[in-house]
Amino acid sequence: MAAAPLAAAASRPNIVLILSDDHSVPHLGCYGDKVIQTPNLDRFASEGMRFDRMFTAAPQCVPSRAAIMTGRSPVAARIARFSSPLHPGVVTLPELLRQNGYFTGICRRTFHLDGPANPPAETRRIFDEHGMRTFESRVDWLDRNSPRAQTVSKVNEFLDKRAGAKPFFLWISFNDPHHAWDSNAIPRPHDPSRLALPRHMPDLPGMRQDLARYYDEISRMDGEFQSVMDVLEKRGQRDNTIVLFMGDNGHAFPHGKGSLYDPGLNVPFLVRWPGQVKAGAATRQLVSGEDVAPTLLEAAGVRAPGEMSGQSFLNLLRGRPHAGRKHIYAARGVHGNSAFNEKTKASQFDLSRCVRTDRYKLIFNCTPSMEYAPVDSANDPGWRQTVEAHNSGKLPPELSRAYFTRPRPIVELFDLDQDPSELQNLAGRPELAAIERELKLALQEKMILDYDFLPLPTNE
Image 1 (spheres, helix red, strand yellow):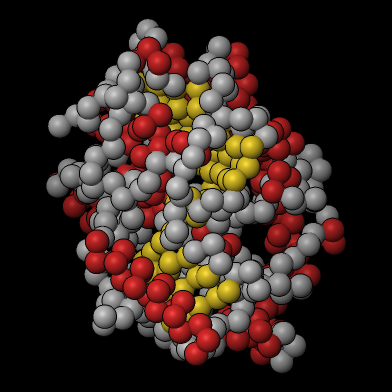
Image 2 (cartoon, one colour):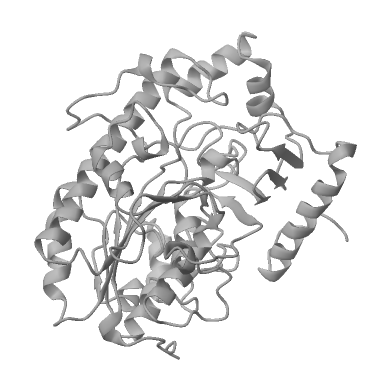
């Protein structure tokens, strides 16, 4: 059944959602990074609202995007397995908008929710035989995986196909700064010696080189972002369009992508909506990837269905009183499409959940014996040198403990005010027992409501 509209079609804004790929805070100039070259996104941030505490619902692209599109956790949306298509019974944001008069589309890099772009032959047969690829029928216009050079032409193609003055929703996915990192078409490569490395990232030559290449890709993506803004401007679609820029999950470095630490979940999130969002605004309220869909539905005058667990932050965007969240949650599941075997590491398979407040985070590890390796970048110089430094006893003890302890603790508790790099596990401390119990119970409630398949963190 179509969701009931709440507002007249004439007042509905267009919506453009742009996702960068594997992009953590603070890697934009507007978040305080003094080295990175992102003039276009920095200017865009000055025209709207910057969110400092947007956390994706998973530290990986497929489940994170599922949450963004469904307003539900990836567990509740039945897409905790990376290679799974989104179940046809799980409704998405563009479908609800389409049912209420929007022209909807998806373009550029794969959107990840119809299973792998090129699955093995037997998997492809199953998908086809059972009609499991559903996005052709979920949106009006679908571009499955076009190259970066076609960004402008694809956005124009979508807008050309719109009938009359229909409001539109367009989801654009960028490749950058996804691993593997390269420096093609970067006018001014970043100098590794000028980068400021956080405590959780070992200061090694290879790590600096990897991070500089990652910065280069963000800079290139900044130019691609501006090319989309230029199309909207030229076609007179600037003033009545909500543009959202967001990372789909964190960067592919240690403590980042594939982990439930903040660098894996805390992503840039910028929103411009002329006349509705105050220029130059910023907020530190907790916001989840689950909250994007209900917020955009409310902005479009469409009632969010009851199964969405996300909370609209439209009032926050408009500068009105907003209660906000006390907790955000995230889930880690299978990553990638490789078969499970004796050599599989945590980068491919790890089952964990987390809950975070303003100050504290609790991580619940259900597969603590898996050997740690960073997702995607384990063969790059930075991680190879990290392993060498650990084996030779030259890695700082706190980093050896963070990355090479096996088994890892089942419960991790961090005071984010005192330890923002999440290197000192406080679980089991008597003075924090009440906080640990509170977070376990909050996580337990979320897991029960989402019909989570993992064991619960407490027997209360």
